[in-house]
Amino acid sequence: QELKSISKIDSISPPSVFIGSKLKYPLVNVGILSPLEKDENAWIYDDAKYWAEQDFEISDVVKLRDSLLNSRFQSKVQDSKLNKKFVSLAQKIAVASKPVDIEIELKNRLNFKRNKDRIITPQGIKAGLKKATITGNVKIHKKVDKVMNDEIKAAEGMKFLYKNNFDEYTLSKILSVGVMGLKKNKRLVPTRWSITATDDTLGKQLLEQIRNYKWLENYEFFFGEFMGNQYIIFMFPNVWSYELFELYYPGSSWNPSNEMKASTDFESFSGRKTYASNTSGGYYAARLPILEYLSKVKRQASVLAIRLETPSYWAALGVWVVRESVRKAMKKQMKFDSREELLEAGKKISKIKYDFDCSGILDKSLLLKQIQEKRRLGEWF
Image (cartoon, rainbow, N blue to C red; front, side, top):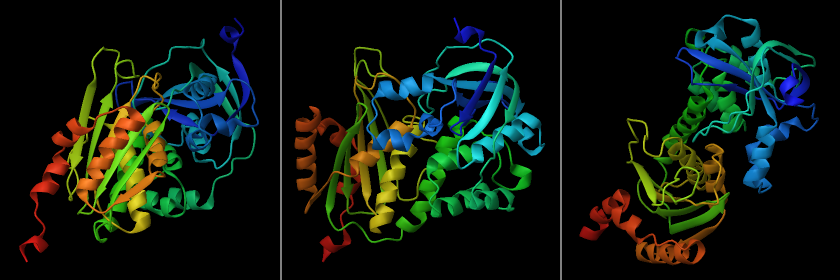
């Protein structure tokens, strides 16, 4: 009853802004996210890395996100260049390096409906924004300020910030509010698009170097899980290629049916020309930590990744779960001397750890087929 009568709140944004994609483009909803009550630890409401490091349960994240208010207004994507009051305010919040004190006045009742989404994290309770004021100082990192004011392409700005230890979460947020890129190209980007664009752009930039590295010295196997998402990853000493299989168990967040569902996407050495529409954002989110690992060890490899989405993953929380699940898997590593040893161990561990027989997937794998068919030049001597 009290929630229904709320019209004004004095709060702190984590900082967080959400650009919706449900309206007819180029019209978008721009939402300023903040807890319903003033919380000095507001940062925790929008810190996926921390949630993963602390092994949050699904219910922990749902509870945090459900207590957020998404105060939103409509805008055209080109408005990012026009210095409009609400858009400018949203931009200041999104690029802030620390939580931002704000006062919000709403123009209509709260909407408690939660939408399910593969890419984005739940966005809290929605309400129309009537008035918003930043009541404290906004701190912007000087390197972010530089990228915002330099006349460089968005991809170059992302590359610069990423090299300076700004993670993909920060970059996708900055990209979404239209402050990066050449002045003529600046525009608001729906959050779901900016997340996948960031994962893909950073991945492509890492691959520029990785394609020139020597092959892995060993056959490597990784496995791990987080929030009911189990990952099994095979790495073969070979030129770069990547294949992802996603299996959705009955009763998991994306499969209400009684049968197992599956999807797959693949890229060869030269990469993809089209969007990975089967596994969608999960494809790029899973690829990024894998590429970060290869970049760190300065090697290239052919990588086969299998995701098992179990019934334990009962609420869709967004593609960050994929990214952090793979990061956890990359910490559990085993090395083998031959492809046969790797595959045999992978089958056994999958069965023991996750009660999953991966033989069927290995038989269907395009990547494995290519590796087996391409006889190495050394075999002819």
